Amino acid sequence: MKYIDVFRTSDRNEHSIIKNLFDEENLDYRSYGEATDNATNIGALGNDGLRIEVAESDREKATEIIERSGFLGRSHNIKRPERTVRRKPQIGKWVIVVLAALVVLVAIILFVWFMSGN
Image (tube, rainbow, N blue to C red; front, side, top):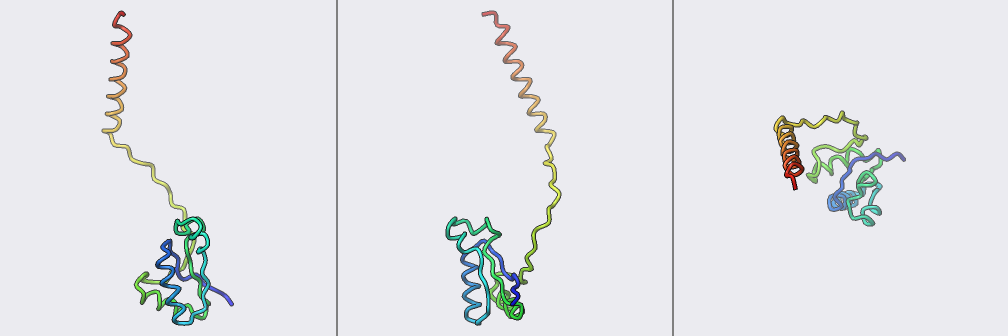
């Protein structure tokens, strides 16, 4: 039997509620990530979160239950996020002016210190 990913979260409470709702409706599902979540207590983020898969024949019913629960407006069709182009941070002109002023201030302090004649 083929299973389809329908729900993913990093919140163990949401995960437990959805599992309970699926149990009440006698849906055939698999749950992943709970062992890592319990061991690390960080929402199973190391293994792509807590997720639930349902049998392909139960997909529509699972989607309806998830929508009715209010956690999602639609079921997850989980895919790996595409890599986005990382933007360079924009440094304002004021940052450059402040850094230049600090350099000048340090240069003045060093000049006065070395030229004091002591």
